[in-house]
Figure 1 (cartoon, rainbow, N blue to C red):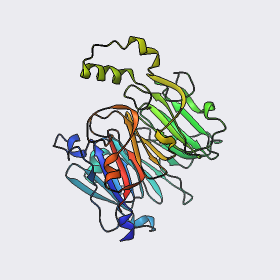
Figure 2 (figure 1 turned 90 degrees about the vertical axis):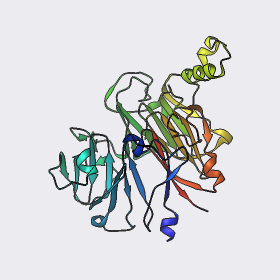
Figure 3 (figure 1 turned 135 degrees about the horizontal axis):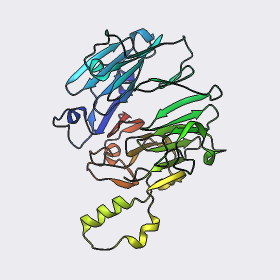
Figure 4 (figure 1 turned 180 degrees about the vertical axis):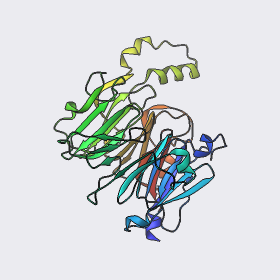
Length: 351
């Protein structure tokens, strides 16, 4: 069907099989198995992924969510959205949000008493983790209230920090800040949502949270990054990667002279110049890598590459934005990117 043609998902990096100690699918991208309707959305955790295989538009009660881990696929009937982690899976349906321990969820045993439950009013609905009056996290206490004045239209969770995109395109951050991931110029934590003033006057259309880094895309298609750059995940010069290259090339040259040029922590948002002044339409961050989709439907990745999550057919980390040539060579237009911690999932349109 036309719908399925537009809903092909490929993945590269760390697989659920590898998480279970089994051999993975190898360095190239693997295709997510899909039925006649394709897959409309994916929600990855470290060791498993939840996919939406249902038709659209559709009544929420017939949602086609499925949880997939190594060698296992279990339907999650009646649920519309997921927020997965290694301890719990939060699911949202038409009338409730509930959390189950990961093991119960992977076995598809949702008849047991949930670890957490919250009844929801009918529409309108914002995407998880947003819930009326606050947001969900896949660990206790599962729900956090937001200040009444914060009109968030999107919210993303890092390992220790939170980003919210406000109704007017402003960005708020809070939580842990020791890697500069909050973008306020300090490395202090913030208990309450705080406006990222450095982005003031630039309306944003998208936000992403990595493990300890952050990104946002402006309505004009500019990409801003901040936080930890240890693995080159901000596409800024990384000392650790330069030292790695020097060891491999064994040139014996000292890096000390260039030390000043390296950035380990970027505590304010930095405007990133992509090759050829490309405009960005979407961004997603893994634990320590970053992926963007350009308005022309190409994928660029950078950061930690140990599991092949950058899609360049190798296991090399990079502090420079590089186009994923495999997708270009196959004539695939990228429409969406969603990073798991050590994995990258892309929705592509085939020629």
